[in-house]
Image 1 (cartoon, rainbow, N blue to C red):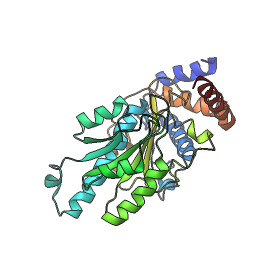
Image 2: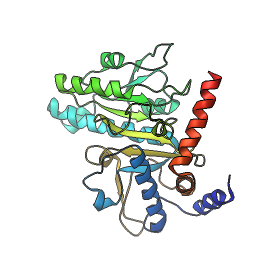
Image 3: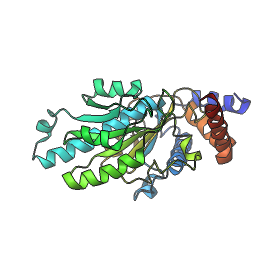
Length: 298
């Protein structure tokens, strides 16, 4: 750790970032980082940007919380679609057991979503030669109870990227043919701060129309401190609005998008420091060095 980095972390330990009205300047830093991450992932500017001053997203306690939030928004979005399609009441649609399509190379965070949020996993087994899913394999698992597809950018076995671009193309056709609204959550826990600096990688982020949300670990290749994560949604309407809780008892009114409430601002401050300290060229240099090392080891 650099001395300035430690100072930023220590400063954040004194601040409860959940209390936006007591620490408005600190939360502005949070929103600045969310905006930087959203730009990095090519998120389109939402219509309500001027109202909020930020893209729809949040700093989280690691990428696990980010994955849970992304999965929950997919579930609530699907529930609204399913109830309308089959003319079901709120109580009736809650009895339906939804599913999520994902590679067997998934990280343990998704096990929490399946168990805690009553979602059935529908697994796609990757080839032992590629360790990545295929669009055709994903298509076979999708039905009208599918809330979405998870594509992994950098699995924990060999760092391989699922072909998000191919899954996106397949979903565009499938949704049109069958009247579905299945979208993609990109689990970029490892690749979220690597892939943007690899020009040879095809579009995998919000440049693809079916990508609805992206999550990443700030404490992995984002270079922040442990327990830092980020989630960004394409828009608030129909997505992040489902997990937004209005908080007013702390002296003002603010929206909370996270599962956890009280937490220190350390990860946010260090992430902000690292973005400014390293810049695009710094992260690009780190990425090139890692890829060179990986190539040598392989």
